[in-house]
Length: 224
Image (cartoon, rainbow, N blue to C red; front, side, top):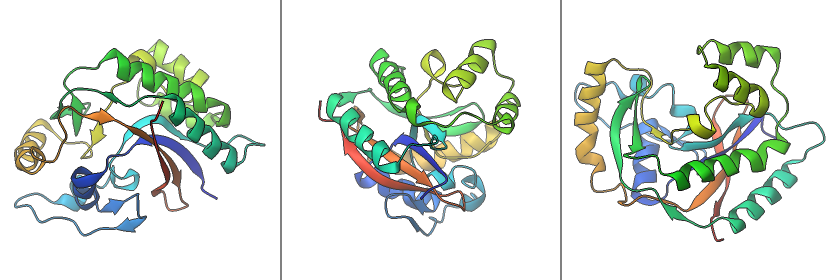
């Protein structure tokens, strides 16, 4: 039994292997992985914040399971959802510094991606326990807009719908100079392993353990 659950996009193949080594955590195998050695970059420090999640794109943010809901029901819902959704392209991903961190981000936020993310939020919300007062207070530390605050109250997370921006996080908070250095170091390593165009071809049901680490319970291919 995990403490929280989430629905992520998780890559496969060489990009997944890179992400596991870069972050030091393979959520697919639930194992720690040695960091790469890169000159003048303290990889463990740079990746400390995103490490627990593994390489991922958030679709339904972490939530506690609602009273009366069983994990088996959540798994059944994920299987049904994936069978109803078709895989789709989201164009080219590029390394960019935004919102304080470096991530692989689509060059354009296509409507298909935003609609898919919104459908994911709605499909799994019945399994989400209400936010606690502490959850709400913590989220409000981010100085949310009125719309984001209402989305947080209604759906458990502020950055959804028109505020959703897909990304595969590769660092914690960095200043502009450190981010530029990191992007320069990672670009040659990623240019041949990031698919182009990039496909969203699955959703991954994730569980967070008592130590805060996320584990991939199952990756469901989109077959609709």
